Image (cartoon, rainbow, N blue to C red; front, side, top):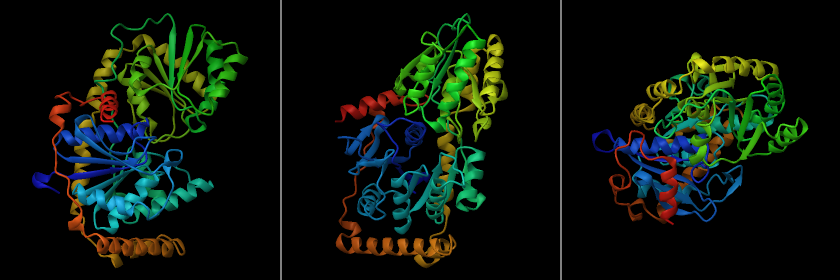
Length: 455
């Protein structure tokens, strides 16, 4: 920790700009607000196309696009030790005090946290998703998470449901896990200037069209709603493998004039799409939090959502209609929402969202977690290995072997190039030149422009 309690933080994840999603937004907005609080924040992610090396984004946010290409679903190929040298160099060059990893299925996150603990740094992990316990993929991921969190300083979850899920999956003591919800940039997501007419009800769906997001549920719900409500029109934004099923549904039921398919919607244009609607429909089958619901509510839309994961924690009861992930129940929930629309005031809903959710509040609460992590005592290798041994009869021994090899490789790197021989980067305050005093800081749109111009 630097002077006056300021931290120097490395955000590590495979998911960041130019990719768009909940994790990417979370890292970006949290980093911007931490910078405004006076902390030093650096992001490390893998290369995207020809985007590699060091880039600067809005507010002076520095991003290391390390030369690793994505292997599967924007994840880098797991190398265990391949990233040790570059992680060590970044930590020393930027004089990092805390490494903050994001997302359980990010390979780069797990490797960065592992190397950071080997080198004695304090680490914090944020889990953004929910996982099961029965299928092969979940069992594998839970074991990886148990390995990573066995020696983590503190952990953060985005909902109480997510915390319970993470504690059960990883065996982490509950007192080490904090709940800090996501937030929304209310300066960017605002209702339409003029209220949209209720003569035609527009239901907005913006989501990745995949199984986990309930795209198959939409295929059954949309035709029934269109049959029962002749003045309803659907606008679907997003892309994915399930888009074909939705297009087939539209053709089968002759709904071309009532179901509009927008395809992938850039994040900068999401607000303009939301502002044309009355109801936001979320059909996810599993969700730890769902930032999309916050964005819709901030634009004044009444939300209809499946009652899954941490979704019931997101909005007050008068701003959301919940339903079981069943087509019949979803149709009934949409019908109820349509009846409630005359009583909805979009501007009042937006004002409530400004009070309920703020990235500045998220940053302040995250800073408290960083303080707790810094105050954790340092332990030698033998003490740390005992934690890994408790991860299972065979897995524990394997985890210990992985950490011992990582420790030896780190020592070899120190012999090959001492810490003092790695040049320390001077701090440059770019924030005053890049952005003003806006409440939520620069938007993701301006970050896109800045990063592109730096090329």
